[in-house]
Each structure stands twice: as C-alpha cells, then as structure tokens.
Image (tube, rainbow, N blue to C red):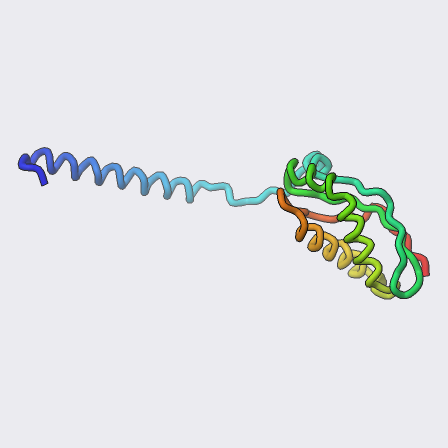
Length: 143
C-alpha cells in the first residue's frame, strides 16, 4: 500500500476503530431502542378523529339502520384527507350496510364486524395515512 509501515499501521488502526465505533453505535441503538408502542392518549385520538353525519340506509332484509360514527386516523395528514373523502366514506358505509340483513347485527360481533369492514374499505382509498379504528357512536336498527 504505502512504503511507510508506520503510516500503514496507523491507517489500519483508524479504520478498525471507526468500524468498531459504528458497530457499537448500532448495538447501543438496538439495545436501548424503545420498542413499546404506546396507546395514544384520548387527546391524540380526538385530534386525529373525524365525526361523520348520521347515515340512514336500508338493509338487504327490508329494515333500515341509522348509524353515526367517528373514524380515527394515524396522522394529521390522514385526518385532512379523510375530511375531503367524506362522500366516499358515506358511500362505503351505505354499500356495506346494504349488503347485510338484520340478523348480521345480532350479538356483539355484528357491529364489530361492520366497523372492521368499513375500516378496511376506507383504507383501500386512503393515500396519506390509514384508518386506525372506526367507532360507532350511534346505532339504531329497525326491522
């Protein structure tokens, strides 16, 4: 490499020390990384949530549902986008409910399944973030 052995040794030592420093930094970062994903506070949930107007629509079985919901997003950008997509959200909700009968809402799982289906469908159209949770704030089923 170089003709001077002292210079060669010094360059090799500096490279080894630099490499050890990088390895140490990565190891410390991995060891002390906070891997716990904390639940958002109620203030954060409210900050990143959108309330939707009451929706009334027919069921496949002939009755109707009156539904009001709050949709929680993961960021301010997603909240802004969701506000702009309110007509799409209402369309998604109407289509999801129109394909269900009154018996689909019996028990705990019926409404929970509807919320999950709505969340999945809205996430398909979102571009700047995602929907974290759909909350049903008012629900009336009429057969």
